Image (cartoon, rainbow, N blue to C red; front, side, top):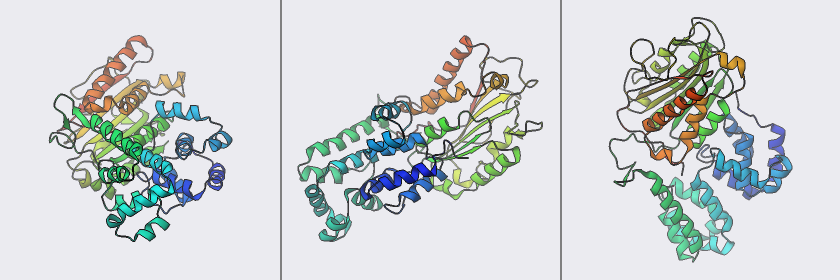
Amino acid sequence: MTVDKVPASLLHQIEQELDADERETMVFLCRDLVPDLPVPDIRKLWVALNERESLTLVTLSELLYRVRRFDLLKKLLKMGRASVEADLVQYPRMVSNYRVMMTEISQDLDKEDLASLAFLLMDDLAMSYGKVTKEKSFLAIIVDLEKLDLVSPNQLGIIENCLLSIHRKDLAKRIQKFKQEAKEIQLSVPETGASIVQVPDQYKMQSQPLGICLIIDCVGNDAGMLVNTFNALHFEVRCRQFLSASSMNHELYEVARLKEHKDYDCFVCVLISRGNHQELFCTNHVVPGFPLERVKNYFSGDKCPGLLGKPKLFFIQNYVEPGNQQENTDLLEADGDLYTIPQGADILWSQSMLGASTLERSPHSSSYYLSTLTELLIDPRKRRLPLLDILVELNDKVYEWNRTNPAEHYSLLLKHTLRKKLFFSHPC
């Protein structure tokens, strides 16, 4: 099910208002999510983003803001420029800082600048100068250089040097600032200056996208928040809502079979459902439900070779039905047979349990566990920390919540068999 689905009529109106350059810019901005789309086929972009659960009113307003169509924001989305800027600060962004920077440089180049850049780059592009200047925009040139592996978020020297050569020091400084900020965020241990790429005891987290994030929400309150968060962390998000136990079984099986895992560095699964300590009831609301132990088995090394040696992260919000709550509801890390303990290497299992009566009192309220988790994951300062440190902070925040909200008491389980430190790469 698509989250916050944007009406087709609205998309059609926007499509009619955009010129060719604006369409090209939108496709470029979304290349990390939807690579190799025809330019400027904006309709195919809408369809592709919709299929990836990435097209919402929030992300649509972000795209219009990036192409500087503030008139359409006001006319069609009833949003002012200031409100979008506030959202960009508060909520996860769909578009990477790298693509925003390239778009802004493109918007600030005049025809003479572009002609000079094309001339300087003609050897790298293996094209005639005349053909480049007549047919290629700056963003099209960047795409060609990306395909040749000459330009990327971590490889910007060729563009910086060209901008300096044509005396656009102002634009070169933007690249220098971007590189410096990215370098600062990459420092996982500030005292040593060791970067993610250089430290051998860290999981590789550099693929684009980082991996598949499967979200199955059988309650319906938190899917949109989770989709936005993991899109911002550069995962390919697949969101399914209100599944039966058999449908969940089928979805897990199909996702585990995906060939894309071999090219990605991580896998995330978020499950939200009513249940008991060993099972999820999904939309069936009957016992027996879907065994929690079975969830991780789909993604073990023998069942899913593409994820062998890679981190597999599971986040569970389980609303425990009456008669199934444990007597001790203190926040704890439990051992023994009471909880499902993930077996096998490279697995992290974070499970929250809350009485289902909370849903009866506040049927549309978000899970404090999930909302706090997403806030921590998208905080750039927190992403300098290993994931386990972030989850310890999550435990502390939930502990404080329990202390001040005794009627809504969360129990947490954190188990893992990770072999290395795991850092979420900053979305450059």
